Length: 307
Image (cartoon, rainbow, N blue to C red; front, side, top):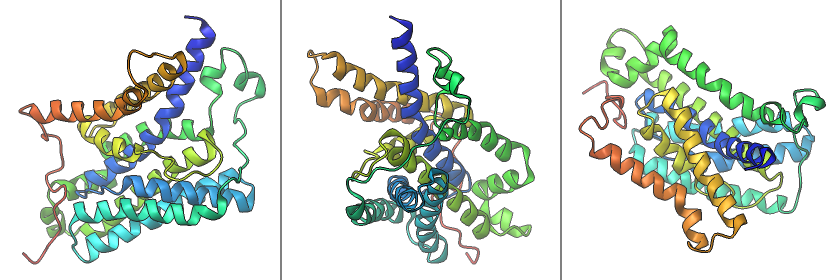
C-alpha cells in the first residue's frame, strides 16, 4: 500500500465521517434532554439547501454555513412547537419532519439545479494544506475541524458545566427538575434548536464541500445513521467519535471497492454495507442485558407537569 493511497483513503474517511458526526452530536444533546427527534435526515436536507442557497446569493461559504445552521434550527423549531407546545407524539412528529424536510429541500432545490457554489479556502498556509503528506492533517475543510472540536466541547458542556448538568437532569427526571424551578420546556427547546443547527451544518457539508452543487436527497440516508450512532455510542461523546469513524470507514470501503472493481459481490451490497452494519450493531446492543442503561430516563416521554 503506497503512502499516497493511504493518505487519500484517510482523507476520504474523514470527509465522509464529518456530516454524520455533526448530526449525531446535535442529536446526542437533544436526546440527553429527554427528547427523541427522528427528523435528523430532514433537518440535514433543509440545512443543505439553505446553506447552498445562501452561498449562491452571497458567494460567501461562511455565510452559507450560518444559513445552513439557521435552516436546520428553523426546521427543528417546527418539531419543537408540535412536541413541546402541543405534546404530539415524538416518534410520529420526527418521521413527519424527515419527510417534510426531504420534500421541502427538493422543492426549493429545483431552482438551483446545475448551480455551483464557491468552496472554502484552506485555513492553513497553502504549503501545509497542499503538502503531499501534511495535507492529511492540514488539508481539510474548516467544517471538518469544527466537527472534531465540537466533540470535546459537547462533552465539556454536558459534564463540566452547570447548564449541562441541568440539561441532563431534565432528561433523567423532568418532574424533579421542574419542581426545583428549572424550565423543562425552555431547556428542551434550546437542545432541539442546537440539534437542528448541527444537523443543518452537517447537511451543508454535502452541498458545499463534498459536491459543491445541488442534487436531491444528497444526504442519502446519513441522518438515519446519525440517529443509530447515538444509540450505538451509548449516549457518550467519546464512543460517538469512534462510531462515526467506524461508519466512515464502511462508506469509504464502498467507494474503494467499486473503484477496484470487486466483482465477487454486487455493487448494491457495498452501497448497503453501512446500513446493514447499523442494523447489526443495534441488534447486538439491544440483545445485551444492559441495553439502554445509559439512555436518559425521560427519552421520548412528553412533559406533563399537571399529571
